[in-house]
Length: 257
Image 1 (spheres, rainbow, N blue to C red):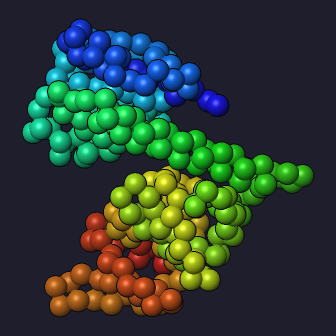
Image 2: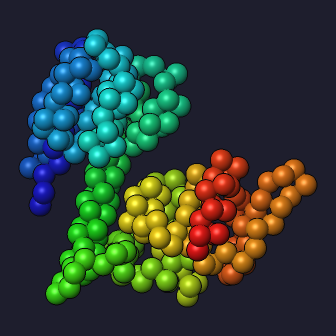
């Protein structure tokens, strides 16, 4: 079993000690470091690459939100904010923290946060494995393909290999995405919409709003509203709002196609 590597950053020694005392004693967990400042946390995350980071919201150097902002998306571990202040909750989930734990917390609450973080880490590892599988399938015995031919996703405990022309559109759903297929099946892997969009590639798919990506040859109509907005009608009957700030890019994509 691959260990979950955990980093703790809190400027209060007693808070760090309590967190360590309440974490499960488990061979699958490894504490890679404790830090008292946000600046130290940023450096340690980049150096040690932990899977999960427990961050206090208010620390010297930079606060928990600034720690996350300083890291590129691919550098960020699963983030659990641990703080005495409920007022930061909206900001925490705005940076896609997997949980937000208020002090004083108990063992059960901490274990719930750890389970959520572990689910996030495992789903990200599954996505990376799927991407590697796609690369191996595309490159086996042949020159690299100009576009991916398959999308490998883990849904309901199984790996599913989809041809790109089986994907009609994809929508975000909390910590999951819903992949709508030509057969009518809906798959729900635990991935972000951005990660799926990157794996689909830009040749045939386009983001149409912050929560949806469509295959452009599945677009049947663009329907205007009296307010000047547009709704995309797909060939399977799905209706999806077209974001105003993406309208020009989407229209250009359709004309080029």
